[in-house]
Structure formats: C-alpha cells, structure tokens
Length: 110
Length: 118
Image 1 (cartoon, rainbow over the protein chains, first blue to last red):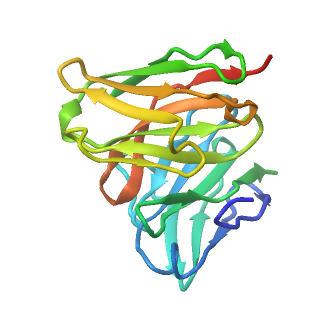
Image 2 (tube, rainbow over the protein chains, first blue to last red; image 1 turned 180 degrees about the vertical axis):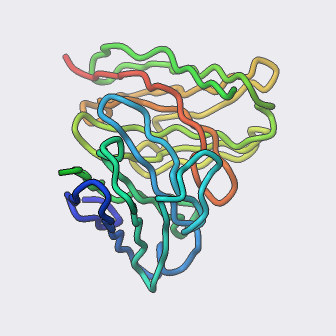
Image 3 (cartoon, each protein chain N blue to C red; image 1 turned 90 degrees about the horizontal axis):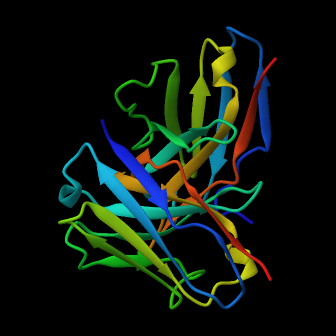
C-alpha cells in the first residue's frame, strides 16, 4: 500500500482538462511544499513534470500545472493531447528524510 | 546533456549479492545528491536510498536498511549500489536519478532489471 493515495485512473478527451489528486497527511503533503509529479510512458523512465507543488522544470509545457490544498495535491493537465497518455506519480517529502510516492494514476486520452 | 546509465542488473538467487553502477555525464556530478529508485514489475515507484554530494550522508528506507549500501566516486562520476541478502521482493527495475533541491528527481537513467529468483 502506497503512502500517498491517487486514483488508479483518469481520462479525458483531446483538448479537455483533467485533474489527478494525491492525498497524504499532515506529515507529508500537508506539512511540506515538496510535492513532485512524474510522468511515465510504458517501458520508459519517469520524467519530472512538477516540483515544489507547482513549479515546472524547463521544457515541460505550461499545460501541466500543480496545486495543493491541505493534505491533497493535484496535477492538472489542460488541453489534453494524445502524448499525455501515461502513468502519473506524485511524491512528497515526509518526516525523517523520507520521500514517499503515490501508487500512480493511469491517464487515458479518449 | 545530462546522461545517467545504469548497469549490473541480472538474475540472482535469493540470498545473493549484486552491485549496480550508474555512470553520469553532462553535468558536474559532485554538485548533486544522487538517488536510487526501484519499480517492481507492474507496480509503483519506491525511492529507497540517496547520498549527499560528498558521500558523507546516506538515507535508506526501512525496506533495504542493513542490506543495501549506496556509495559514489566523484572522481569517476559514478554512483553505486551494493545489494546483499537479496529477496524475491527486491525484483524490480532499478533507476538512478539526480536529485534537485526540494527532494525532486530531475533526471533519471533508463533503469536496469534485477531479478531475484531461484
């Protein structure tokens, strides 16, 4: 069982927006602004999409955005494109130098 | 450009040992914390170890503590993972990654598969 809870799946049509949630506790998501999101295509290594809750690394499209409210972080993908279909994982710093991941959400572009 | 290339994964029997390597290039290796993350077949990600720039500070998750050892050689731009007392549940793709500030993993290698089975 993963430390952070994500929905197993999410979906949307091209051009639409979809939001994936990531729920933790006050000891991880709620306690620190160190939430990251990763995209993983089948058979590939994960790619950092969001760090520090809402910051985008260079090269990540601004269609990807992150936010946090209380113990729940969210990743929103706007203007869905076919290449956005992938697994998405959230992570958060937790107490005692630990970093925990969510179980992953499979995003399907209909 | 940043490149991380893992090697050393193979089939090993339960109780056996294995050493993984990660060759880094395209950046000043000694400036960055580095980490090891694994992904069991069909499962999620587990960041189980990281090491400071000088190698003086290491972190291990409980799942590997006492069995795995992370190390680095800044002169060789290389990260290592010594794995002992391997168990079936250690079967996974093992990734090395460069840690950016705020506990995010900015760059990942392609991964190397470790299979623990008799």
